Amino acid sequence: MSLVAVTRKEYLDSIRSYTLIGLVGLFVTFTVFLAGIQWIPNLPGVSVSGDTNTLALLNSMRQPSLYLVPLVGIMVGYKAIAGERSSGSIRLILGLPNTRGEIFFGKLLGQTAVVSTAILVGYGAAALVALISYDSFALVEFGLYTLLTLLYALACVSIALGFSASTRSRTRALAGAITVYSVILIFWDGITALLQTATVGYTVPAGEQPAWLSVVYGLNPSTAFANAARAVLPEYREITRFTYIETNIWVDWYGFIVLGLWIVIPIAIGYFCFSKSDIE
Image 1 (tube, rainbow, N blue to C red):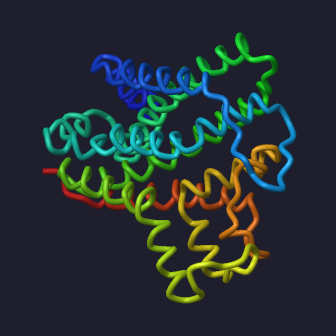
Image 2: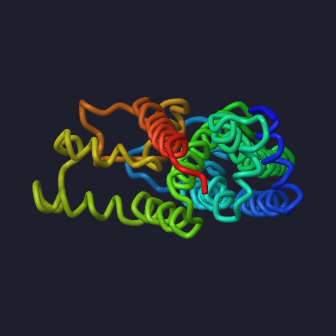
């Protein structure tokens, strides 16, 4: 076996267990439904340029995607290695000519491929609906947004796999991944808002946010994903305002750096723990 073989096995296992089929169905249903909802938020003083139909679709998909993609990534990735250790099948895999690195990164690539396939099929279905039914549709811009979503998915799978590789228990891996999901998507903004209220007040004029607080807001991977989209798609920037991080110290393309950190750090920690652990 090799890295390619482990990756292929992960992908084929997801097909045999109907995981991939279920995820594809979920994303197709989700995106096709949203393709029929065209809404541009009313932003006083902002004139929206670009293809309004495409912006409407991206706006409809933005918030649900921020929550659905991490949820899918975590549910797919948390059991990748911890599940093998709980069942004892990890000993069989290691008994084949595999290194731990091949197993770890094969799992990462395989699980990411599963989530990416679901996203690509789902977003492709939405694009098809848009091309057929919209008066105009910016396919290139939508394609760029889709690629950014794949990067966001990789970060989410990396977080889940990091927990999966750091423990031998599926329950602990799931608990850790759910905790991170909750902190990132439910509690992060609330905690940061409390810090803001305690340090500078409840309301802060745009552009006057302390630099350190803007950095805390920007380190959230979901915010980083939105910032990366704003950096690549100037029109998208017009419908997504982040007044709380609009300071001289923070620019949109930093979102790529933050997403990169959320990919590299969990992978590094997970691989280190897995490479040093005793397999019983």
